Image (cartoon, rainbow, N blue to C red; front, top):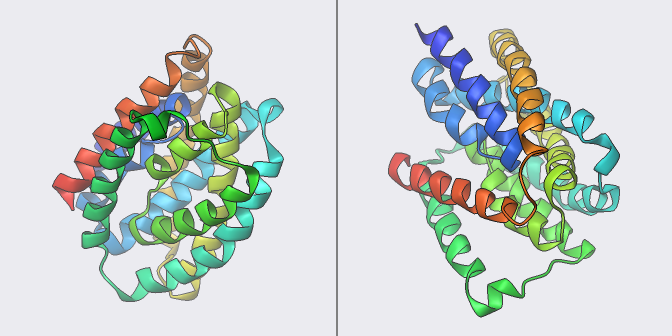
Length: 238
């Protein structure tokens, strides 16, 4: 029963992530924790997300903004190492709730006069990468936190999906190295993550087909709807 539920959730989650750029991990994480326990769930999710994000990079390769990824990676690589070490030695439940509250406040902020004028320059992706990678290493998912900043830079649709996915790939590669160093990345976790990732490739393709039909003016509101849902999920689940 558990493998079937995980497979169905992976397909739905990756389709959502291919349309909104994030949200897939937020759907998968509670189910993986139930099926495998938190110490295995986050490494498994990281392997699966690496494959899922790589598929979105390939599907949107012609629209990538490589300068954004470069500045993001400068901050993300060292922070992912630190976050991975902390994950190996400390619980993360309180951080999950804090992230949930932050996401809800972030959506509210986007609709204030200040938030509507928000813009992010290239250099702003360095601190964003550092904060995102650290949180991702602890709680397994950070896409909802990153989304408003990529949107504020002016990326939409395929450019947003592909660029955010490539930036996330950088984080996941570093995190997996740290998890492996602390013996948190077992052969079983890798095999399960690869199996889930294979299902996610199908979902990424389906989401890409849906994305081509989403009007640009609707896209930010779609992203915000997923932000609110993920924020509430994090607050409730902890």
